[in-house]
Image (cartoon, one colour):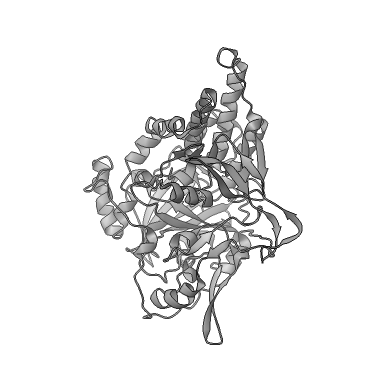
Length: 541
């Protein structure tokens, strides 16, 4: 489930293992397997449409999957230089030495959208069935595990009634179902909650907001990579910015903010727009043109937030399984490697004729024996160190660096990010919405237009709020309705009608970042899959 780097790597590696097995005649001439029995389902309208990352790729995982990747992979440019800066509102202080986690020699600036399209071509050539515009609506539970998925119904109107083009969802049964849905996948969330698979810590997230720009020639060298700390986030919010030079005078820039901030009226999208007004950023993009916009949440919890990644008939990989190094801001290489290790586990299970949890438990054992464990174990307490602000985080990070990730407290515990909000209790009114200048900075709706987002308007709302009375009464009083601010796509509005508040949901704006499902203080927003094919189109992102 999911045609991102993890899901495609899993399918490709499994297809190759099956081919090698069959070419060798199987074990003592035993049962032949078939790559045609591998199905990859992707909810986007085409491969890569929902794939968003900065993106700097460590090639380690891809090199193991496709050893000669440099011959054909769509690599934008190798990293040619890197730097780190501390921003104040009016200045940029360059670190004398780029911190080791942010040194990117040997890595590549890429478009994840293009990389996924390329991987998808390899998967199809390997004989795998790949279907776009199909989303997993629910898992098929059987015994202590899962036995497949049911895809979403197509052709329902806003009231949930069948239209002329109605097609019921398909029931797809499988020996093994692999959840590679990215961060906060709806099926993964349901499985983890139902089977109590949570790790030692709850998963914690950040939101990454990105724009792709075309700029005048000579503004930034292709392959130049810069990361920033400080303004506009201040010392209380975990995160920072980036600016990456790409070929053809394109620039990737963005801001990451941890979704565990205290001010419920904090607006990540507004912070990102202000980020672009800093002189360091402005002198690169001024006179340029906005090409694309996107937003995505990032699983930051690391090793201690990993859910148990196996059940009878099922595995969890990639971002869904917390395979991301938040200190290095990199997860593509781990997504690919987790997919490969899952493929090896599945192959062995199919050969043995046993896909029970006992057999599939070999997957985390393989992870433990791989470089994934070594890399994540060294940063196992990294993100947790910033729960009390930037300066405390930097202090703990320094100690963790010299103690191999342990730090002063191991394991360092955290709460879910939505519990960090400080109550307003009516002390603050609604904030004025950021409008932008339309040249360098933009409002949400302008950015959503540049995300290529499209949904069928006449379909059931995929943002299900369990009790809207909580929104209009309790949340308005206690937290000032933070959904209006944390959503980077203007999906949620509180409108006043006849002196009463009403929650208005503009579901067609949704860029599928999942922030609302994560950051809602009462956890009453449930993001479910819309009709397949709906959502953003991150072409070239």
